[in-house]
Length: 63
Image 1 (cartoon, helix red, strand yellow):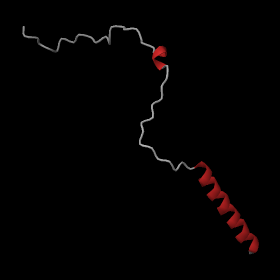
Image 2: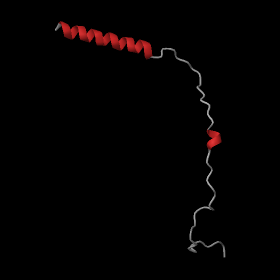
Image 3: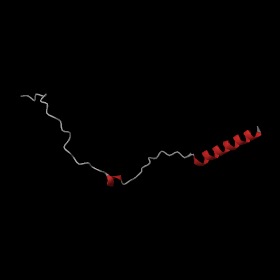
Image 4: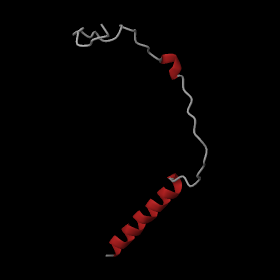
């Protein structure tokens, strides 16, 4: 029983130390801007003229 209590206390202390080391307690209201060079690598596809739609003559355009 003592071993279970000691191990629970050790694990709890380990978790608390982990939160203390890795949890960010400083809150900032700043906007984070990540700059990159993705503009140099944009791929613009060639214009193929759009989709080919068959003319079914279903519209009367004021004849």
